[in-house]
Length: 572
Ligand code: FES
Image (cartoon, rainbow, N blue to C red; front, side, top):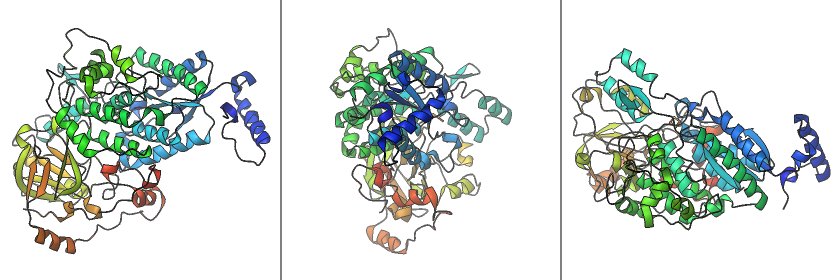
């Protein structure tokens, strides 16, 4: 098999000339013939001034390079898109597939025998894993790592469960303008990813469970020396993988690996976004996520991790309690230890080496779980014929069975304009409905599913209400929130038929979300329904590509043509 600099030559019709030209150009960087004969290890450079979650990437690249050179390889870092949650308009999810395409094509286009993918912020790890799955070059996922916790008035704070809680308090008038300014400097005190069990932490844990990240590395804080040692180790291991040509992502991310990843997702109180990303990743490999099976896991797999937003602590505490290997050890026979990892060993080997930390309470036992059930439940009903999701571990137990009057918002903009209107006809028992916020409707399925409590109710002390939408929500959010309704309203899903004052019933125990309107009336409304008008600029560029090819949430919102087996673009 062709390796190193001879791999994937530029097409000039003369391979000898192509190699000669390649070597001539790269020698301009000062490389010797000896260096150019070594196995090549690609390293993605996702540093960006816009992305503090990747603030340590330059140091990580240096450490990976050190590992590669210690093992006799040639490291080659190259840039790709970097996506940060707060600097992505309209939303980071809109750009995830673009980053996946960029990364996949750069892995294909440039010569490399293995690749170390460095990512951390919510959409970057999924994008990189999707790219690695499709390119199928031996790959290691190196996580940038979580931030350290913040402190304010003697309290530990974390981005961004506490961002939301404190902002809600500000909206309710209990935190003034001066204090909220101070807090903005304390919620994210170091570089690295959000340190609660949000999407970034979820995907870090899931990467370890999939076997595509080195064991025990997902939870190391971004600023710790161990993070750099993990990068060096990844570089060394990537050289070994380059030499033997494997294992490849398709040999690691098997159905068994996905079973383990979904089990870990449930047990950590993981982000609902994690399921969307895993569905997209599985689709790249020709694997279907079985939602019924995932729901069954939600009943069987306990939540074992005491981290916000389901619990009380943060990623650095989880790390020092033993991290993912210890968690998987506690999960016992719920994990299939035969799954292969990037180390060349089965998952059971790292589980056997899990650190035992006396008296730690962050990783619970199955006999003493944080919650008896897993993080998520899959719902269906006449409002969600192809499914919806609720993060039950972060919901209010008193609202898990609830019937209320619908208060409908037509779009994210409509919600923004009217939610705090003192004249809004709303009570704490109502069900807030947001539609046209799905993959096509928004576009990009923004994290708008965490509808704010209307200000007048927040000021009365209301902390949670049933909220439903075809949007996503941040993994850092807390509340009784039904998300990912499929099909979405903008493509004709029944969410688009709800009217103010309709009754909606949520029944998590029986996994139902229903609009209590009779069938004949719904048929009449369906006949009257018209699609929202096209988004500005939707006739060109990436937005056009996106709208014409994006799949629904149950398929991971990937582009249909990037799946191993295309199914269909979004349609009701
Ligand atoms: Fe990057 Fe939270 S904003 S991980």
